[in-house]
Length: 135
Image 1 (cartoon, one colour):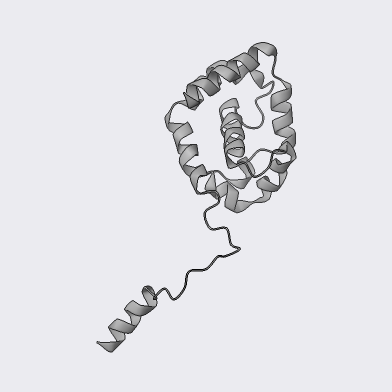
Image 2 (cartoon, rainbow, N blue to C red; image 1 turned 45 degrees about the horizontal axis):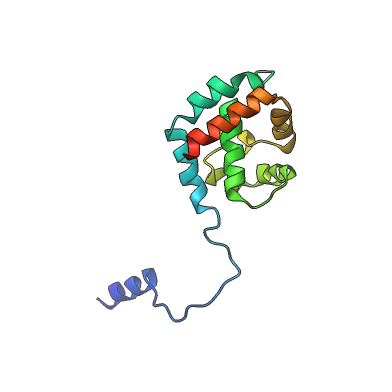
């Protein structure tokens, strides 16, 4: 009987003190929820229909996946620089948080090429897409 109580104490140790920590435990916890929200509202239908022709080749990620990963990057807010996509591509924890394989994440060059293909009309469509998502 004493062994049972001891194992219960190991599973649920007593809290002795509450202190600050330098560890970041849940800095990106909401990204998975936001990613699922994007998947469930039909982001793919809107972005493929309105922004699909932005991509000039079939290689790489689809317009839907580019928009999804870019929106998650902006919602994360860890950096304002597109070059930060490169360290994120190497971060397996970030890939798991956004529920993608590390090989499927975008590089900074892919993001710059994606935005470089936008015309004024496509920018208007992107704004319309963002309104559909957030309003």
